[in-house]
Amino acid sequence: MPGFAVDLFAEEPFDFAAVYTRGVRVPLRGVTASVIGLDDLIEMKRAAGRARDLDDLLHLQTLAGFGDDSDED
Image (tube, rainbow, N blue to C red; front, side):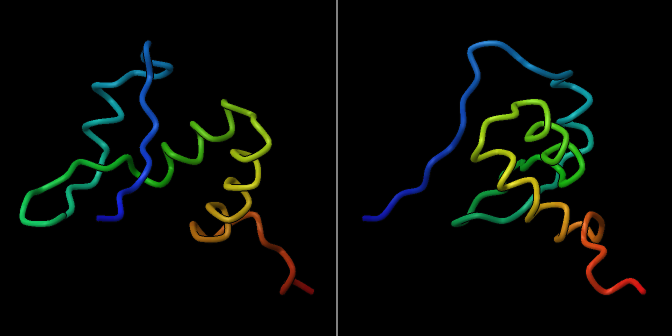
């Protein structure tokens, strides 16, 4: 059965209660899962600063509708 990867933290690198409150609740295989909101995920990726996070950041910013000015005159 295929799985998926998740990031776990030994310490909270952010205000968990605030991020949780802003999170999104989504149905996932018969249960409701709490997922970090897009703006908080972008900030978390920016703060991590690893190469793969910075690559993710470019895609997340495009998804959020900013950071892509290729169609501006």
